[in-house]
Length: 56
Image 1: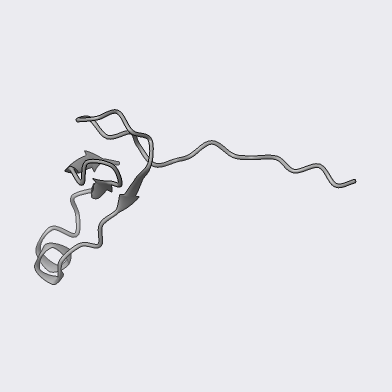
Image 2: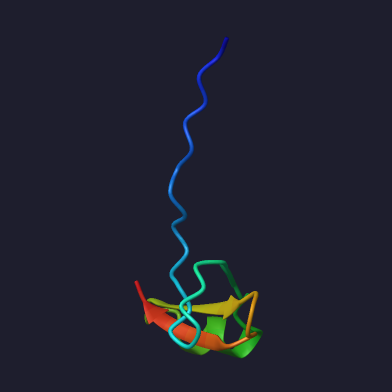
């Protein structure tokens, strides 16, 4: 039998509801072109739909 190893989620928990199930939101065209040097990642929560930014 093959052993399966589960990895911990790398997406951050929502600061509003503390739900660990979040996903990345794509950057807009303007944000990509103007702020390419700023390491900000935008996330959205599956539960409460809160959008938040994180510095990486």
